[in-house]
Image 1 (cartoon, protein in one colour):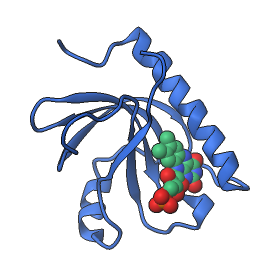
Image 2: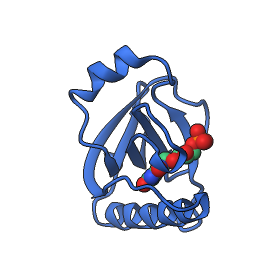
Image 3: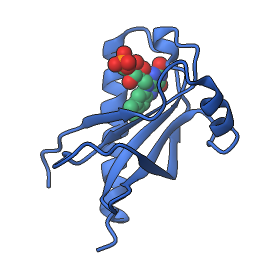
Length: 124
Ligand SMILES: Cc1cc2nc3c(=O)[nH]c(=O)nc-3n(C[C@H](O)[C@H](O)[C@H](O)COP(=O)(O)O)c2cc1C
């Protein structure tokens, strides 16, 4: 597949549910951008790229985890996902503009796609 739809499915944690975030931050990798594999409870899985961080470009204060799927989501949006961290790509940074951040995210996506060409994501 070569034309890839990047679809943001979920922010795992909503702003405000800070106890969960605190608990989770103990097991989370350091803030940054990662190649990830996302799985739902029905055994569906997707290659993905995930930002763990504070979104400094937008002055964010709370830790959030954002996962973008690299393949289109067909069927139901998963209610709960498991995100497996496979490879760290970079630190989270503050960008001068949302456009610059967007270009960087597209580069992150391309690096993640290259990763999954070497190491396929699906078990089947
Ligand atoms: C792959 C990826 C990389 C990201 N890298 C950064 C980053 O380096 N710096 C940053 O401030 N936000 C980063 N973000 C988070 C964006 O700020 C976030 O997606 C954006 O604020 C849109 O959120 P909103 O729709 O809630 O406004 C990244 C998000 C993704 C998915």
